[in-house]
Length: 325
Ligand code: ATP
Image 1 (cartoon, helix red, strand yellow):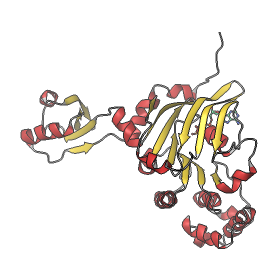
Image 2 (spheres, rainbow, N blue to C red; image 1 turned 90 degrees about the vertical axis):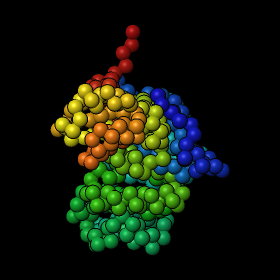
Image 3 (cartoon, rainbow, N blue to C red; image 1 turned 180 degrees about the vertical axis):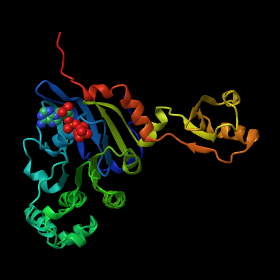
Image 4 (cartoon, rainbow, N blue to C red; image 1 turned 30 degrees about the horizontal axis):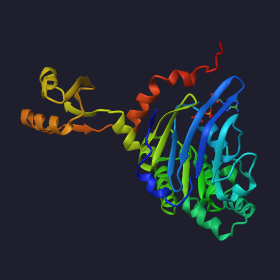
C-alpha cells in the first residue's frame, strides 16, 4: 500500500480536528466481504476522493461515514462524533448526495429544495442561491418528475448543499452530467473547498479526481491499495513518460539505443518511446531528426489506477467470500 503522511493538504488541517477518522472498518453482506480493515483520515478542508472498480466498496464506506450503515467492526468518527447509531446532531453539519437520492417528484424543483431547506431550518433565500449554484434556475418551476436525469442529479447535489454543511459527501455526483454540467460542477466544488468545506466523494472519472482531489484512496475488493495525492501516486508508481513520434522517422533499433529509453513499441502508426528521463531523450531526438510531430504524454492518475487495479480487477468482479480452513 502506498501511503503518504505529509502533503499539500496538511496545511489545511492545522488547528482543526480531522473531518473523518476511519479505523479498521470492516463490513460484509452475508458471506460477501465489502470492506476489510479500512483505515484512513480525511483532514478538515480536504477534498478527498474514493476511487475503485465497481463493487470495490466505495459506496459502502461512504454510507458508513454518513451514518446510513453500521460497520461490523472498527471505529469511525465524523466531525469528532460517532455517526452510528444515527446521530441527529450531525445531520445539519453534513450534506449527503447518494446514488439513489429520494425526491418529492410531484413538486417543482424549487418546492423540493425549499422542503429540504425547511427540514434543516435553513432560510428560504438559500434555495434560489443553491438552484443558481447548480445551474437549475431555469428549471425551478419544473416538476421533479419532468426533469432530465442530469437535472435530477443536480437537484440531488443542491439538496446536499442547501443547508451549507461543513462536510459534504457526494457519491458519483457527475455520473449523469453532460460535459458542460460536469465542468460547472467542478467550479462549484472548487468554490466550496475555497470556503473551507470538506468534501468526500466517489467517482469513476479519473481526470476529475486528478483535477479536484487533494488526496485519493484507491479501493480494490474492499481494501485500500493506495492513498496519496494524485501527483504523489504518479511519482511513486514510476509510470513512464511516453514520447509518440510518427513511425519511420527513426528506426526502432535506433530509438532503443537512445540513452534513457526504457522501452519502444509501435502503436497506432506511432513509435512510442517510454522513458523516465524525457528531457534527455527529447534532446537526443532533436539531434537525430528534430522534434516536430513528437507528442509527450506524461503519466496520469488513470495510468496509475489501471496498473493498481488491473491485477485485482477479477477479485472485484467475482465472488470474494472468505474461505476458512
Ligand atoms: P460501484 O462503483 O459499482 O458503485 P462500489 O465500490 O460503490 O461500487 P459497493 O456498492 O460498496 O461498491 O459494493 C461493495 C460490494 O458489496 C459489492 O460486491 C456489492 O455487490 C456488495 N453490496 C453492496 N450493497 C449490498 C447490499 N445491500 N446487500 C448485499 N451486497 C451488497
